[in-house]
Image 1: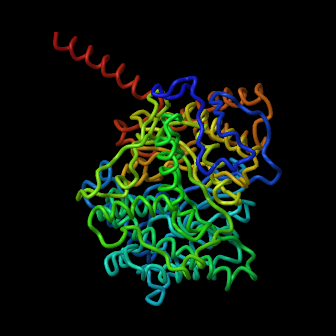
Image 2: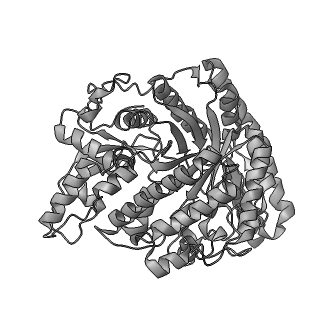
Length: 570
């Protein structure tokens, strides 16, 4: 893979700054094309994941309350093609079916989330607890354990009860801290005898920025310059309170762990001879991952965030910084509230310094950073417009976490790639390549001394992809959303990932290349299943059936029909 054309080939990529203390990882080297054959440590946990709103469906069944995503997705124009998660994968009704897929993959763990409004419909515990919701998650957890699959459970994957948004303004309001703690405490009480790995929040960056700054995600608020910082402040406090609740009330009895899942792209300086670019790249990561990780591990926001947001706030004529502050008591309360760190990672950006003029009405989280994000046009990008395959950035991010936060135990909680195409493609060779390269960079990071304990492929199934609806697919398994039964079909990447799991890594070049070849060969049988199933299940939708060759076939059939009609006319 070639470096960005804006950077000379003779340049050696590095990130100096405070990373110079890293003894095991050489930041001056970036061997883009090297592949390491070897295996992961014994006991390494392999998994896949999904989330409640993206997969469950049953949005208004069995006493479930409304979530902000139920309401947001029902507003015209908010989601691609006005899709909703009303039925999504119908996972609510397919526990046994989906666990059989996990068993076939030989997963060690499955990561899922509990829908807050499914067990507390209004979000307020004292109002009502929905026993049918409790029963659903009981059944899911029990079936996982019966299949020797460890449940890793996320408490908040973006589906805030709508009542709390309407009544209090959601995460803009400090009252969310206690309501979320009540919900978490109920989950510990009901499920903690069997669940030993808890994640408080999934990607709070997205909740804060896209939910309360840009409005792209639910609840769709556009509070520029303040909304994201305020939401994040309350989320960090809520995380800390839940950790302390578990620590004081449940840990001794249940022996579990509580962490958080933070997402972060890697930022690499465009020009490594330019100190401003080097600092901008660090700033990018600190405003992304460090925004949440630094308070949790060190007690306060990154100094660079405090400096930049504070200075811009003064230049705007504000009396105080738009970035909230923690009291000394809060700092000590928040610091150290992480038994493990979940890392969600998908891609990398090149970063360069850019001055964003202060004092404008358009001040926002993005302009506070004084930087520009760039991509190499040669980076593969098969799906989401933001997701380029840049494997080497993964290793660098993991080493950054090691250096910055005292080498915590890490679980990779999200990593994967989407496709965005009109034709169905089960022979997903690009996904195989993505997983192969990214998992290998993670293996290199472990050799560097990073404490990575597990890996979660994102995702098990194609699912509802937030504002993109069903137009993008991340799944190892294809889901036919046009069929009311939502059948699942294995993509070629299923066979490849299964081999990685069985071998606990990459034994040798010949064997790994053989895995890829066999995986692509086997996907043809899945293609036949996908082609046949719709014909028997919904004949009335013949024009909408999609199979890997449907684009080519439709063109040929159209040509034949056109010739036939022309001959009849003549």
